[in-house]
Image (tube, rainbow, N blue to C red; front, side, top):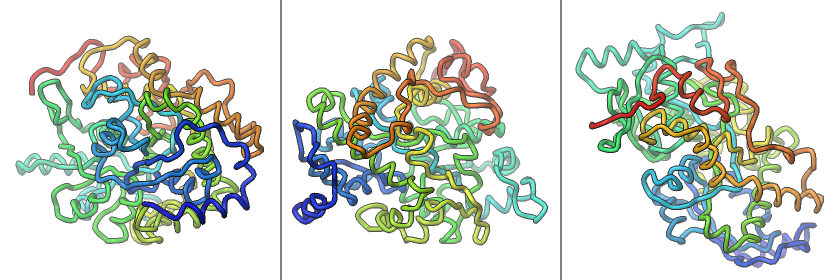
Length: 451
C-alpha cells in the first residue's frame, strides 16, 4: 500500500512539532507487514497521522497472506519489520520452526481476541451455560459448558475440530488455556508429531484470520479463536456466537508485538528508535481522552488496504463494547487496549508466559530452568530501546513522563488468580512453579514421545 509521500510530507511539515528533531537515520525507506486484524492499528495510525513522516521515515505498509509468509519476509529482509504474534519472535529465537533472532522493542496491544462457536454448537452448549436474572448467558463462559458437546461428538465417532491462527499464536495458547480450564485436553506436540493433537479431546488446526468465518460456515471447524473483527463478523453474518473474550480469560493479557530482525536493530539503531517513537505516539492517540479517537480509527481500519471489514463490524468491539449475540451488546471498555496499563512496554514476564505455554504443550520438548526463561525473554524483548524512544518523546513534549515505567525491572507484578479464568495466578519470575500449578499440561521433566 503506497500513498503520495509529498502531499503527506507537506501536511506533516505544517502541523508537527516533532519533525525538526528527527534522529540521524541509517535507513529511511521501510516496508512493514501486517495481517488484516484490528490490532494492526498502531501501524495504520502511525502512517495516517503522519507519525512515521515526523521521524523522517518513508513507510510502505503491506498486508500479508498469513503469519508464516509474514515471518519469512522479516527473516529474509523483504520486510523491515511487522505486526507479529508475540510467540513468533520467541519461537524463532529458540529455533521452534524457523530459526532466526527476532526482537521486539514495542508491544502492540492488550486483549483483542475472542473464542467463537457455530450456532449449532452454541445451541448444544446453552443448557449447560449459567444464566443471569434477565435470562442472558452469564459471562465468562467456561469450556466446561462445551465438554458435554465434545463427549457427544466422541460417542458418535466424530472429531471435534476448532481453528486457531498459528501454532505459536496467542490464539492457540488462549484456546488451549480455555479448553484446559474447562477440563478438555487440547493435545500435545512432540518432536515427531508437530500437529499438536496428541491425546487431544479437541483437535486444533490452523486457519488464517480472515478465513475463519467462512471456514466455520462451511462446517470444517466448529469454533475458533481469533482477533477482531473476525468474531464480530460471525455475529453480523449470523453464523456463530463468541462465548468468551480474552479479556475475560486473562484480564489485560499481552497480545501482538512489533517484530524486527536483531541484525536490523544492530545495523540501524536510530531507525529502530524512530520507528518505536512513531508507534508509541500512535498507541497514545488510540487510547487518549477515554478512547475519543476510536471512531476515526475504525474509519481508517475499515479501508480495504488495512482490515477491510465493514465499519460497523470493526466498531462493534473497537469502540468499547462487544456483541456476543445479535442484540446482546455489553460494555467492555478495555477489550482493545493500545497504551493504557503500559500496554506498549515489552515486559519480560509477557514473553515468559508465552514460553511457559510452549513448554506446557510440548513445543519446548524438555524442561528448562527458570534462568533459561529469563535469558530468552531478555534476548527478544527490548525495553531498553523502548525507553530510549519514550524518553525522546517526553523531551519533545509529545508524551507524558508519568506514562512510562522507567524503574521497571521488566517484570510485571504477578497476575492475581481472580483475573484468570482458572483461578491460577501467574508470576513470570517463577515459570516452573507456574507450570506445576496448572492441572493439565507438562510439568517438571515430563516429555511427550512419539505421535
